[in-house]
Image (cartoon, rainbow, N blue to C red; front, top):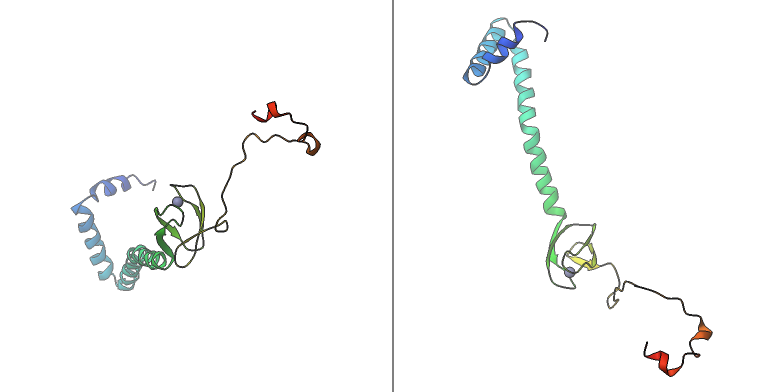
Length: 137
Ligand SMILES: [Zn+2]
């Protein structure tokens, strides 16, 4: 890396020159009886090129097994999720769980999700003491 000629070779190696250099190198190594090196290098390059393709195909296969496309059971919005995961419906905000066939509500059917806002504690004995005028509050 610190050799002065290295940078020049790298500059020459761009584009078509790269392939010519590679071919020359292959021929040279083959002539030197290093065919096995070329073969192992070719195998290595082949593996490097095939790995992402195989990984992509594997990922697609896995995705097809685990991807669930169904409608939200509450608002019928089309949703996509992974099997066995939990998600929130982007339309109605219902927490949903993905099973083999579609989306299920995490809470039981008929449960209304209520967020308590401005809760005031009222003592039990204080309630009957309210006069009729205060009820309208
Ligand atoms: Zn929804």
